[in-house]
Length: 411
Image 1: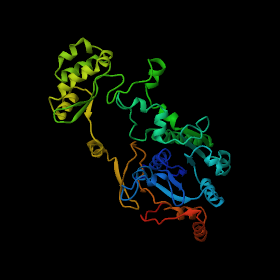
Image 2: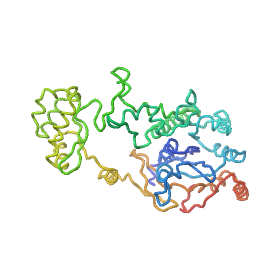
Image 3: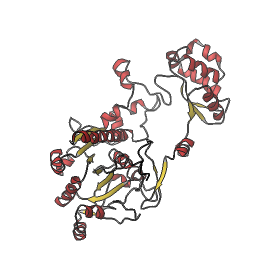
């Protein structure tokens, strides 16, 4: 590593009690910023995301996505011995994070007051579906449930049929706010010397991502309707068919008359520009079906490459409608080196690099997604347990252990 450029969170240790996506994606980001992530999992079963599929050389794709860069310690937290180990880990940690149903960690003796007694300046982050208080406190919350409760599904899809958002948007929203909150808390601790407890609700998080939709409800005429691949407030805006069987996405909507004029010039349809039915953005929205029909007739005259060259030459925002396989070999992604490979128990595994690029800090992609309990022996030895004690705890089922197949030094 370049000595002049270090990982920004180098020296920070996170004890990670999370599972699934909402917590693990947050700690994945922290690991890429240089934090050491000690992932606590149930002996025998581990994080539930490990077993959703087996498509990555026998490893789950979700595990390969959210858990690289972490050390796995298999630990039973329901017994005193496991809780004792956890307390010793907390003594050496900067951050503790969990995403269980509220009240679960309290039952393990992990209220904030008790955690603070172990490590006074600890930062304790809670992630839950609906918050730590209130009438929905005790409810489990998978991503689809939050999408439904947040009204997202009813804004997504075609006018005829709603659709879920394909990625785990609500989990990711919670992860991003948890990461931001942890970074803020670390900065606050640096200035004041004080740790803190904070919580993130998935419902809160994703509602703040709904953009201008709430303003339609608050100040408009009700909830936004489903518009498929179009835009709720601009036209033309969306994908249009090309003569070679592909689709081109173009965004020439809005109230800017010059952009509208250029678009009509680009598709060689001055008559559309002069048509009073399409004179303003509001009129274009009201007459979108007729407008789109005329645009489709124009775009089908030439290939997508023709239209992209023409739109770009005139400064009109446009792009290709790719499938994911195309996107993963996109020239911009390839040039930026976003996709890396790391070692894992099942061989080389592709991971995404940390998207922010800095002149002062570097991202970290050293460890692959770990085996369940891959680092149990090493981590316990670091906090004072002798090999005989570790063997006895393993025999009693307090911990789970797995070999370290990569040979990577995780210290």
